[in-house]
Length: 295
Image (cartoon, rainbow, N blue to C red; front, side):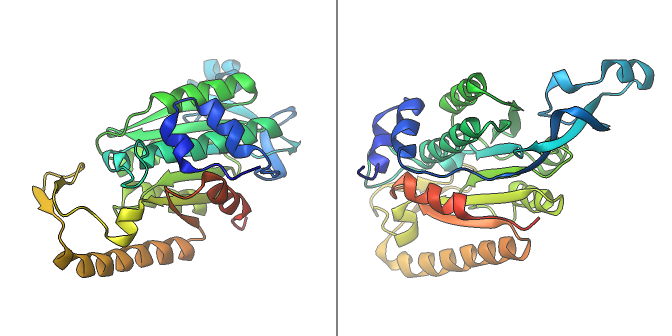
């Protein structure tokens, strides 16, 4: 089957259609592993964290201890998969070569495909959207209805505002007590940032963390139009113009920035995939799925 191009993402808002085309012939899953989840055999209690399923709360223990706890059981199964979407204002950056395509729509497609693969494997999976200084959750669950909930949330997301601050992310991104698989889509324009710090912290908690850094061809090559004026969507820093005389310095600074990002994530064993949104999404998915953090 012919490779699906990014033009499909630009020309439809139907995520199910995009998933069907992108995943056709992909022929691989996210992982296989051992999970501490909602199995039959009771293992232990742990404190409730945002994103946990309410059906796993022990209500009798709540009555005695006046705190929420969830029951965990260990079984041979699949690990939980979490999808993290940076939907801050910079993710609205458009492609200069494919009309209608931007970073957010590309990130939305990649994460929707990961969710679909997790659903096919029988994994529990959930979504965290970071935008407007807030964290919005779709709690982890299994099954086709869960995929519909995740796709509906992804479809309505708009790129706006800043990332949540470090304290909010620290309290929000606690997930499960056992290692999970975390796929984060962002552009890493801010470094360090609350999100980068959260990803490193999650890796130290033994989660398998895999990030994709999304850029446009124009950002990578410095091929911006010198006519329009540009404003940083996340900072009140005035208006900027981009001319040929600035290109060399821009490319040098850009290379230094992303070399720093790559080195820091590599040092923390956070897996990083680099992607231009004009690339075929199937190629990036294969790269992302081949990665594997050490446990």
